[in-house]
Structures are given as structure tokens and as C-alpha cells.
Amino acid sequence: MSDPILEVGGAGVESTDAKVKVLMNNMVNSDTPGFRKAEAVIKSFPTYLEEAQMRSSTQIPKVENVVYDQTPGTLLRTGNKLDVAIGGNGFFVVETPWGRGYTRDGRFTLDSNGRVVSVAGSYPVVGEGGAISLPSGSKFDINNVGEILIGGIKENKLSIVEFEDASALEPVSGSLFKSTSRAKEKTIDAPRIIQGYVETSNVNMVDSMMELVYLSRIYGLDTKILSNRDVMLSRAIEMGKPVQ
Image (cartoon, rainbow, N blue to C red):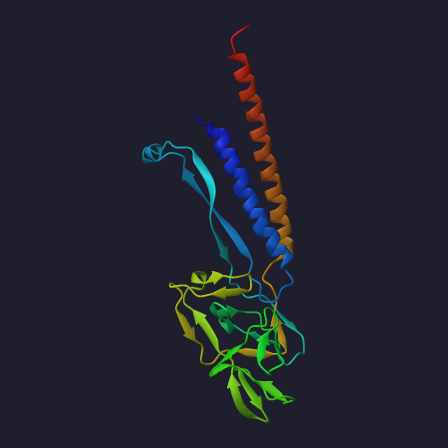
């Protein structure tokens, strides 16, 4: 029969380790434009179903899911005409090998074919008529609703979409997401686009450092409990042995 203290303590170590890994990934990407901080959701599950029905079961912490906070980051001025940020809700749309991708990272550039592509991944950026291309050497501007103007004439328009429940999106990375059956896409006809700016990560490094210290203490307590319990069980086994 398993020992409930070792079982719960081991699960606590594993769940804390999972939270630390997610937190460290957030901190590593704190300077990545458009990055969304993640959080491991920990829930307690009963050890045995029969005891759970009688509400007398030991509760074991387990990682149920990892969720991404879609709170916007701050805007950083770059002066690059192909850097754009979204003021308010919405995502840029890019073409990826798996289909449409959604991101808040508005760092764009031109590839060798004149297509507007994302800096991260070189994915073609989607406009009203599909992938956006610009004539070689053209002087362009992007106005506050995402229209791409050449000589004051509209050439294309950035496709900006939103979702009723952004948590239904599936993460490819912390700054790129893909759709699921629960994610209902809706085009924003009049988005607020800001040229020459990018949106920074929404990771707060001070908060992250404080959480890391807290998790380190919890991890230390869990491992100490496991160590002490292991010693106690070893002594109990020794005491139970028959005298030779």
C-alpha cells in the first residue's frame, strides 16, 4: 500500500517543478515582442474515487493545464515602418504550414519576393486579399486602420481578427497561436493600428522573480518532507525486523 505523505509530497514536487519551468520560460521571453505569459493551473485530485465520494480522500496536486494571459503589453517605439502594433483587442494573421496563425508580434519585414513576412518564423502576413506583397522600392505607409498606402492609394489592408474567447486558442509558442474548434474568428473592420511601434511582452520581471523565490521555498519544503518521511519509514521497517 502506498504511503499518502510520499504520494502527496511527490506530486507537490512535480507540480512545483512544472510551475517553475513555465515561469522560467516566461522570464526568458520577457523581451520577446507580443509574448504572452503563461501559468500552470494546479488542481487537487482525490487519490481514490471511493474515498472521494465519501469526501475522505487524500488530495493530490496535479498540473491540469497551462493558460496564457492575453493582457496587452506596453508599446515600444522602433521607428521601423514595417513594425506595427494593435491598440486594443485583436491579432495579426499569418500563413503557417499548419494553416492560419495568430500573433500580437507586429515585427514585419520583406522577403526576397517582396512579401510582407513576420520576423519570427518568416510567415507571410495576411491581408484582405491573402498574403501581402509590396512593389520593390515602394514608399508606403500603414494608417491607423491597417490600410497599406502607396502614394496615398490603398494597396492592401492588414487582416486583424479577434476571438470571443481567446483562451480557446492553442499555443504554438508564447507569441503565436492557432485556432481550435472552440475558437470563433471574427474580423475587426476598424482596428486601431500604430505604425512604428511593437507591443512588448506582458511578463512583469519583478513579479516573476518574487514568484520564483516563493516556488523555490515551496519546493524546498516538499523535498524536506519527503526526505524526513523516507527516514521515518526506513526506521519503522528496521524496528519491525525480527531479531536474528
